[in-house]
Amino acid sequence: MNELIPLMVIVPLISALIISAFSKFNKVTKIFALIVAVCLPLIPLLSNYGLHYFGGYQPILDNVTNVVYHPAITYSFTFLQQVFIAMIGILTFLVVFVYLTKYRKVSGPYLFLLFLGTAAVTAMLLTDDIFHMFVFFEILALAQVGIVAASSIDYSYEMALKYMILGSIGSPIMLLGIGFLLAITGSVNVTDIAAAVHNGLVDIKSPVFLASLGLIFFGWLYASGFPPFHTIKSGIYSKAEPHGAALLQSFTVVSMISIVLIMIRIYSSLPIFEVFIVFFSILAMILGVSLALTQTDFRRMIGFLAVGELGFIGLGIGLGTQFAITAGLFQALNEIVITALLFIGFGAIVEATNEVDTRKLGGLLAYHPKVSLMLLLGGLAMAGVPPFNGFQSKLMLVQASLSCGFPELSILAIMVSIATFVVFVKTFYVMFLRPKPNDLEVEGKEVPRSMVFAMGILLIIILALGLFPDMVVNGISNFVGGIL
Amino acid sequence: MAQTQLAILLTSIALVVIGLYSAIFIDNIIKKIIGISFIEEGANLFIVAIGYKAGGVVPILMPGMDTSWFAANAAYPLPFGLVLTSIVIGASTLAVMLALVMVLYRRYGTLSTKVMLADTSKQEEYNE
Image (tube, rainbow over all chains, first blue to last red; front, side, top):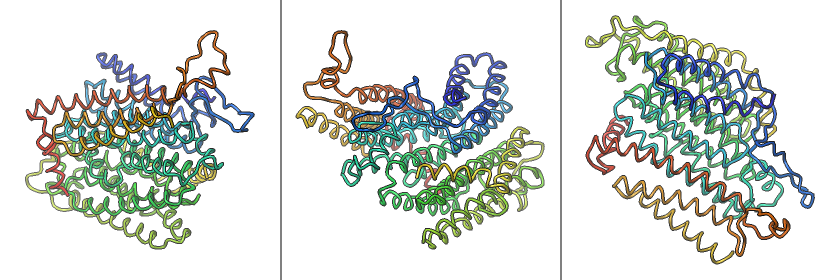
């Protein structure tokens, strides 16, 4: 059933175009979008693991050099791709469901952008071709900008333009890096490039190879929202609709791991590569949580916390051992779910109060107990409190730091987790526990049931991953063992 | 390395450097976007230069051509295919950027980024 592998990209891509073209038929568009959204998590779950060669062009063995070449774009589908694509599919379904139930008249272009983004990150995860990855990285940037610009939030156009300008600088720089790799290996297939590097056909200390690392790394920093792009990344989350922000952050996490997994395969023989990743990850952790502490807009607060959590992922990957990379990837999966829960939960509060400033909120526990409880549990999961999934992945990261001989990194990870806990408890107290301000109107305003439903599903996933981490950790570990 | 190839590489580097200067230091948003296009075209030109072959032929196998002669003399076709895709993506991002600029120009009546993007900057500074 390897024919299902390209369908993971083709289905959302074609559906996006169909929805955009026929969006004037409101009811049909809604039903079609919902059916497609239901199918998205099912396709990866039904598909077998394996490779898909576009055009049917199989790898070619050069009898003279005894080297195998990949003449066409290849999609590789393993357990890691399955679990991440299924998770993105579930999240897309929930976001589309929340959107469809929120508005009577849906926007075709907005749904187009949601599905386009999903198709782009799926392709980035599947592809074994670095240029193909770059193409979908650009498409993803366009979708992200569109999702931000389509929101009705003040200054969303300005933020979208800023993000677009930075992206338009970061992307060609990454393309130059890919060009450098093409110049020294003659290929854009990651397996071929990695084989050339590891078989000694490329001098890994040559300036061109090192420059390619620097240029692609710069693009990765932009894609991940690591410093110096952390402010703009949290900015776009705050200027998108809350359900859109939930999907945007998942796009960021998946594009981050897609690019870094390619970089690991090519540059893992360079020790400086891991040092770079750890350095920027520490910076992201510290800056993310510090800036989150000072925020009064809770959307930006979650945005900065999400940047800090990305630092944990980078830390695991930067440590470079099989266990540490597994911990980093498990943390990535957990962050997608937890941050989505928080964005949708706080979005529900915006729906009920029309307010994003924590200083103007208070006493909401009495009015919205279900949302309050689920947000509390989501916040505890992000801070790494047992028995949630965040605890499992952060515990693995601390163990990985210790086993790699960096106890200071494990102390830092624990301190950042405590700071995350403090940020969340402070915000929770201000919004839900302290007395309600007199000028805050909450009577008669209900939280949309679709948002509560979405939060419930995400909470179940958080608990399931926290109580039974082995159901994904073993598979991820096997994948990491394969690429190392 | 052929002289033509070297000239192309130097031109691509010049385009990237000029583009970066324009994108970072010039206030006018249209000039900034032109600078961004320079960076993109510099990257594209660099990739084209990789596929250049001195005295080579266009990598299209015509009827009657000897395949071994063609393999020895044709330019490397992969970079050209990549650049074609990259140009299309560049045009798409350019169109989106200009569309956003049009909306913001109608709102602010200026092309200055200091004015156009000031509100969010001030908001961010306040938040941070």
